[in-house]
Picture (cartoon, rainbow, N blue to C red):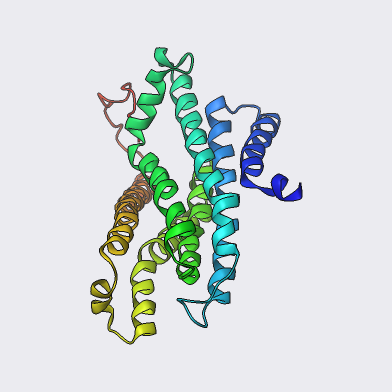
Length: 290
């Protein structure tokens, strides 16, 4: 009974439900879209902390022989929490999408329909595909096709979730209006560092560890592995690289904006009577969805 209650099927939707009830009583000015967004991010952070902790435990337990050492958490975390979370998260992302556009006044978002679902899938196609791929690829590999080997590498894959709490914290700080504080800036650095380390550099590291185990150089590892393993690694790595590039571009834009703001403030301080700036033709234009 305790095992069922602790399972992700109950934990993650339950936490999401609790946050959606509690947050409006604390932040009364928030819209439904704000509440759903922050609730989703909080649950994502909790899952990420659990997955990272499980990953550290599995990696430490299996570091003796990276191919044959076993640890029960490598399999059971995927069953109890990985699959339920990925399934829940697709639904939570849809709700966040739905309420965001409903608050903006889109007529088709007055109620749930195939139109709203189709719009969500089109706008968040890569994320939805990522979740479905994990459900249809990682689960079968973890349970059926590993031949009781490679728990160490499953633990490494759990560590990819390390960046999620920092990504979520950034969005929550923006929601709280704290995007100009030092915490948000420091968190932005942690997002880039953790994302690169645990979602990109982790894959060359796993190839290097595998090569060291068998006494082959890292450039020879892809030829030592099966085509399906290499393709699976590439399919997981490719969207991570794409998202990292987007994060870097966003960080660079924010840095440039801050530099321009600082320069403008300095010029105003040195000029007692700054000339008025002409009104912009785009001041009253609706802003795009970034």
